[in-house]
Each structure stands twice: as C-alpha cells, then as structure tokens.
Length: 515
Image (cartoon, rainbow, N blue to C red; front, side):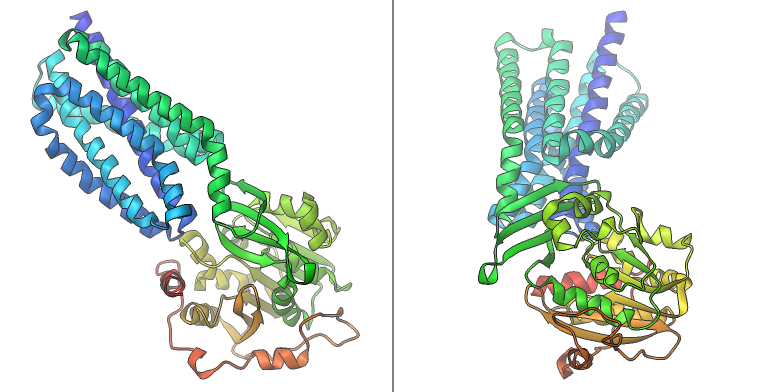
C-alpha cells in the first residue's frame, strides 16, 4: 500500500506539471499573437477556441490507445514537449519569413490541443492501474490536480518565464520540463509493465526531444535577431522587449545622405527622422497658439512632441505621461534619440510619469492649458480605451475651460472610418472639434483633431510669428489648407468608440488589413 501511495503521488505530480505546461503553451500562443498581429481579442479567441475543440478531439482519439496507455502517454508527452516547446519559435519564423502566421497558429494550436486532450484519458487509465477507486472520486482527484497545475502555469508565465527567459526560450524551457515530467516519471512508475526494448526506445526519444530543445535554446538569441531583422528594411540599431511592447529602432542612410532613424513599436512605424518634423509640427503647434503655461503630453515617449513644446520659452511646465519606462529611458539616454529630441527630457520644466494614462487621469491634478495625445494607433483593447469617449471625458476634467486638446487620429486616407470615429468620440465627450490633415512622406496622409471644451469648433491657427519658433513645414497657409478634406474622405457617419464597444478597434483592423 505505501508503494501504491507513492506511485499515485508521483503520477498526480506528473498530471500537475503537465497541466501547468499545457496552459503555458496556450498563453504563449496568445501573447505572441498580441505582439505580432495586435487585435488581442481575436488572437485569444482563435487560440482558445481551436485548442478547446482540439482537446475534445484528442480525448476521443485516446480511447483506442488506453490498452497501451503507458507507451501512448510517453509518446504523446514527447510530441507535446517538442511541438509546444518549439511553438513560439516556429510561429515567429512563419511570421517573419513565410507570412502565414494565422494558418500556422491554427495548425499548432490544434496539434497542441489534441495532445493535451489525449493526456487525461491515458492518465486516468494509469491511475486506476495503481489503485482501483470509484470513477467519480478518480475524476475529482485528477481534475483537481490538473486545475491547480493550470493555475501554476498561468501565474508562472507572466511572473517568471517571460521576465527570465522571454517568449522563445520560455517555451523551450517548459518543453523540457514537460518531456521529463511526462516521460521519465511515468516510465519510472510503470517500469515493470514496459518491456525493456520499448522502455529504452521511449527514453531515447525523450533524450532526443531534450537535445532538440536544448539546441534550439542555445540558438534562440541568434534566431530572434535574424528573424527580427527580416521584418525591417533597414539595419536594426536597437531592439528590446519590454513588459509592454517591442521597441525597435532602425538606422540607415536616408534621402540626400541624411541618416534615417526609424522607431517601431510592436512593428508599427512611429517616426522617421527624415520627416518627423512634419508630423510633430502639425501635432503640437496649432494647440499652442493660445495660453500654454502648463502642458500635458499623453504618450510621446520618444520626446519629439516634447521637443516642439519646449521651443516656446513661456511654457512653464510639461507633464509627459507614457506607460513604458523603457521608452522614456531610451529617449533620455540613447545618444541618437537624445540628439533628435534635443535632450528634451533633461529640461527642468519636464516631469515624466510612467503610468497607464487612463488610470492616471482619474487622479490627475490639472488644470492644463494644453493636452496633446501622441499615442500609438488602437491595435488592441489596451490601446483602444485611449481612443474612447470615456478617455476624452477624463481629459476634459483636467483641461482648462479655455484650453486646447489635440489628438493624433491616424490616416484619413488609409483608415477614414477610424479617423472619423475618433473625431466623433471627442465630440461626444463634450468638445468642439476641427479635424485637419497633412502629408508625412513616411506615413502618407495623416490626420489630427483639434478640440476645445464646448460646442464651438476651434479655428486652427499658429501663435504670432514673434512668439513661435521657426518652423520647417507648417505656416498659416498650410494649416488653413489642412482643414479641407476631399469628398471621398469626409465623415461617412461612423460611431464613437467606448469602453464597452471599442468600434475604433474594429474599424482600424478592417481598414489597415484592406490596405
């Protein structure tokens, strides 16, 4: 009996570890889709729905294998460890070189789901071999351990594996643990039931899986650098994965011999040093035509919008709120970016807050004369909330009644429904709005919304020449023309985005996918 208890404990421990590994594979696929594709809700739905369906298929497929449960389970765990461990690496390769990410994630999620689904019937059979018990009690024990293991896997993925190893290496480490827990433990418990040649073959298979995973682990950094470079036209000068996003800066000779420094967040271009002045002059200077003693910048961690604000000597204080401290640290410390932003973050008038803007605004002091939002386009729920009626309502609480708000709103040409949805949301939050657009060669046609509290639409203007710095792109004539939209790019009658119905995300994903 003590020996049976020990065997039962080891088998349930194997269930616990395998369940944790299985959930890590699921979370890794979801997280990778969010990083590479955006639209986290869709990526989560695809992975989870495919995997749950496949688990049912796997449970049915395991029925005829129960007569050889030990050998079948060892093979299932070996294949699962190999596919799950390599899943992130394979999907990154499919995205970088083959452009078949969605197909690949469905295939891998299905295979992993089938293998996870096959585990429980086989484990249940082996558990009954150790000690016969009522089916209901056996199921209760098995699923209790399985769910607790899933809890461990769910917590270890963001808190341990990602910080220590990153996505690729983290999945490989889990694959190794999965192979040992799923094969070695079971073969040890039932070693007397497995013929020596079969046992030797399964152990050799496990060793082979571990060798493959170890080799991939050793080459993971080199692979990631090569795959990342494949996604960008120019040589990568800086790259890092933070807790919030992937930051990549490329550097190459540009027009007329000028260096072209480009910042990408999660693969989306944020600026090109060749023409970023067009974007930032158009964003900042119309909002600073009036009172501008205190300014709030939401986003803009590269400090380029901040650079333009600080060119006005009568600006007394600027608060810059950006979620990612790695981005503001880069803008403060990395020489090429410091040179481009004129070392703006070293100015004594500047206060940097690394926090979620939505939450921060609920307790923000205010009032501010000017609020500038320079945020990445809405790609997922986390960014879509920063283009919601509720978000603009929070801004209205901290904006002086005579102040100005300006919002970068995407491309009226490539994504007109997205652009006008943002404008509609600002109006529904209690602002009068004036949309305008300019051409930025690296982006194409790009749009903004200038707004003031109340119903009155503001008249876009610049500060008098004696008060404003010399501008390279924008003047009164260009700004006046910027408010005219062609017939095919005027408001098509779209809805505002809210927290409960983030339509801006639907518009954005549909329009940019079509382009």
